[in-house]
Length: 256
Image (cartoon, rainbow, N blue to C red; front, top):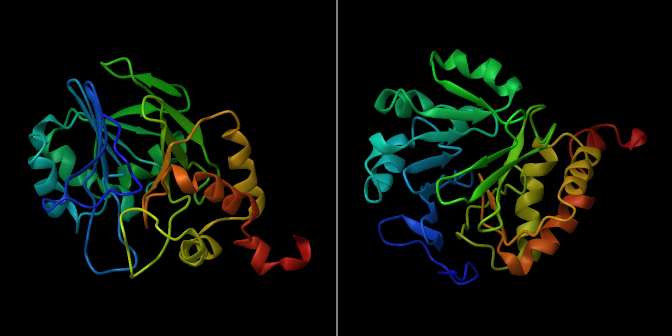
């Protein structure tokens, strides 16, 4: 079933289906606290596979776990995609691995070097060597490198079945007047600026990533912070990233 993301609202339970296909579903199970720095957590369910996308911080783990428990037993979470190692993205791995030590962690070699500093052990899947994985339904997840956005080993995840792009910190936004989905792209640009100007390396890094998306059909952009960018604003979102000045562009304007 195709869900209209442009009109979707958070369900009372906090568990919000974003895409529902036969044997393949994407849920938003994120955080609704009153903070401009909200964290989005996503869950992909496909047959016996239940994969978290950027599972979030330890502080938010109880809320996220409670929401997931309304969908599937937490012990059945089989994997976590970690776009980079920061605590708002990855620290709850400590708790998830305590529930299921057999859970796989999908990430890059650069991130894999740093995750053990959380004092965890896990089954590692290198997303550079395994750039596409096939789920039980036949749906495929494609991992796309996003160097220096904002970590050298950062990457995004493209769900080929739904055409959803899980973008990590790319297209993230800081906004105290938050909604699950962007309704006013012009105003949302200001919220994205607040994040990108400080956290992203440069326009060169941004443009390089946009080039990697050539030929990929994107139905929605699902960032780790801020609001989801639905299909009606995807082109504007790509244009934003193509042109944003950030990081070293602002610190050393004479070189940009």
